[in-house]
Image (cartoon, rainbow, N blue to C red; front, side):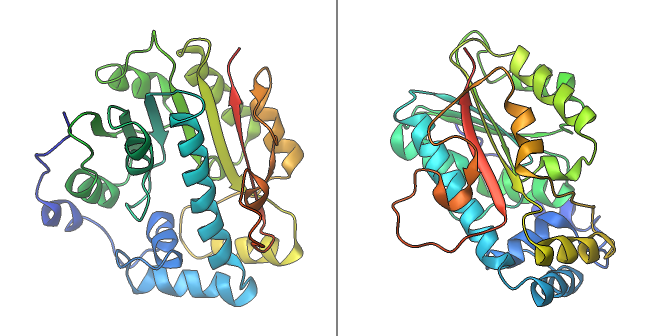
Length: 268
């Protein structure tokens, strides 16, 4: 059953320091949401002044999520999703996309931000045929994440592990790889990894993120596509492989190029 008993949102939000920008709220601002504060908008505008395409990059990242989850729930036949680094709810959240394809899909969201916690439990209510849950946990401790998620997901059956726009918050590749390997070791053959992140593929995006990281928000570290490809070692990449967001199974509608790559891969 869907989670229909959220805690009081105002109690959670009252503990948040709104004077410090936060990545989830800045991202919400770029996507046109209302769950952000002046500090978030200032930091977001600072990035946009240097890199005007940032808003389009955020939108295309979200569009990649939609296409990837639709593929996983449809063509790949996945019924269980572990979405780490949820961020603030917006249009076409993972459970909405998956449950449109298969209403019996189970989706477990994971984040460690109190504002995300408050909004997620209030708003991330899915189809009654399926299950939508939110866990307050940190992906840097994947064993804890897996232990909590096991209450709602059957790890003897395929699971899609989703890491959309979150691994950039961990700058050291040697920390990221063990996290991903731990998550994938817990799921069986036929499971999938879907991952996307910003890339250092233009001078403008590199400079904008340098200033962003000095704004007080949690730092976000850009990577080259080659570095991101390391995260898929040992997996079978789904065509067209690791590509810019706009090139992954898009409709060819002429979306502009963006500084972000993503891929979906199957565990053999």
